[in-house]
Length: 201
Image (cartoon, rainbow, N blue to C red; front, side, top):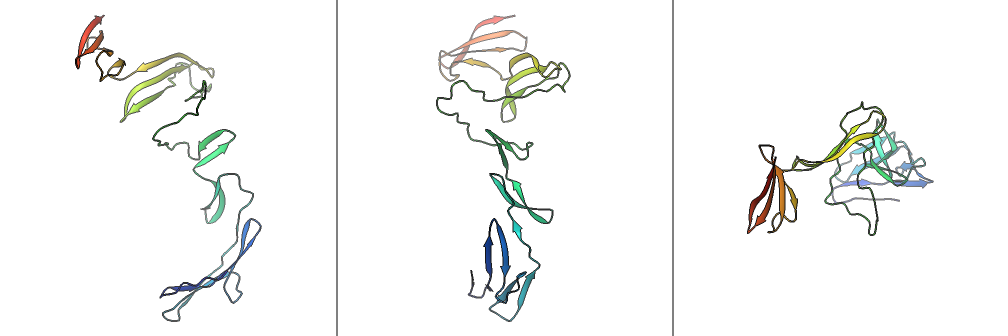
């Protein structure tokens, strides 16, 4: 294949021989197989890039890409690796940013989130994850390690200001919370205002 780029740009004449799963040869018209000659229309300056080596795609796995690393081209995983039905970020310390998560239609009973706990954490170590908005914890799924690859003292911790039953912006909804005196307060919304319906100590 020969290419020429004109209009005061460099002229590139090259030949690519494609073998099985590899780029085998890159040569100039003179037959110098390890060189690429770049020649400009303005002037007689010729620049030669020599010492080019083959790039081999060696039995890549699905979803792999060719990446330049440590002075050579290698087969490498992209941002994700795929094993059976599991997709894992190549760097597990990275966060994944999504607009939403869509669950398959008619999925039945599924597990949305699962945290494994090994036997390494000592008994009583908190093992939890939270749901936040703008860096503020609203809901925490809580447990403690039992020191034997299991958990104990499981619970759901509400860390928001209020717990609502019904839409908080609709009259007839309820909410409850713990006030500064450690009392349980239950309120009902009526004509846009939250009215206390009971206080428990």
